[in-house]
Amino acid sequence: MSAQGRSGERRGRARAAAALVAAASALLPVACAHSSADRRSVAATVFPIYDLARRVAGDRLDVRLILLPGLDPHRYEPRPRDVAGLADASLIFAVGLGLDPWAQGLARSAGAGEARVFEMGPLMDPILAPPGIVRTEPLIDPHFWTDPVRGQHAVDVIVEALTALDAAGGPFYRDRGEEIKRSLQRVNAEVERQAQGWSRRRIVTFHGSLFYFAQRYRLQVVGVVEPLPGQEPTAQHMAALVALLKGPDGPALFAEPQMDAQIARALAREASVVLHQVDPMGGGPQTASYEDMVRQLAQAMDGALR
Image (tube, rainbow, N blue to C red; front, side, top):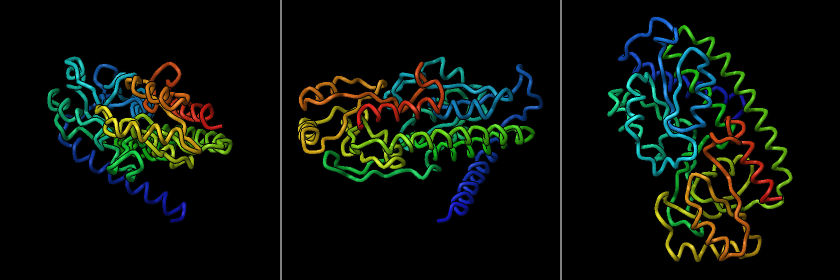
């Protein structure tokens, strides 16, 4: 497909997403002003979506992050204050694809209603990772934001969704969205240049979080330490990973700060390899923006693959 065709397809999907949001928002009270006292609020389940949404929204909407940085979305248990904070949310941006199923329950408990939960992942051309040497089932990676090109499409979807809630702010959201997309284009170009220096190309991730990043920058995810998030890997699975790491052209091994690295450390000791760390969620001091998160992924690859 040509670049023009892909661009048209992305715009079409963004408009379709906006239509879904508009249908849901028609059931909500109409905001008649945008003062700090009565402007609408929206929320996002994870930091990468939150960062894009708050930057598109600017000062026209309040944007709230549900999952605090450093927490694992797969093991997250909502707190009472999370429920209370969503009572007035006009829209909740979620990932879907199995990452944040708790968003629907939060919305119901807060009285916001499931119609206000907008799952973005299915609109991002999700990747079905095939079975491999240390994985017996296909795996859908919901972490679409690790690819900044998909991140640009996410910005389009967010712009259309917020415009459906606040039509008067449409030009404002579109202008800010275009600025953010240019920033993401620059980050993608930076990482493309870095990737040219990665002499190794095979990686083992802690869980299935980097398939989009790997696809974009021509890496190969050959193993996953925890194939099912939250479930300890079997002894057979660990033995297969050790053999893989010790083998010729052994892949680089990564842990993640949101998850207990004890298993990964044991694996690194057994295979006598270095354990690297990568943060696919962001939001910490070194990953305080979407772009910082992507750059940190690239820097981790620099340290492991050059």
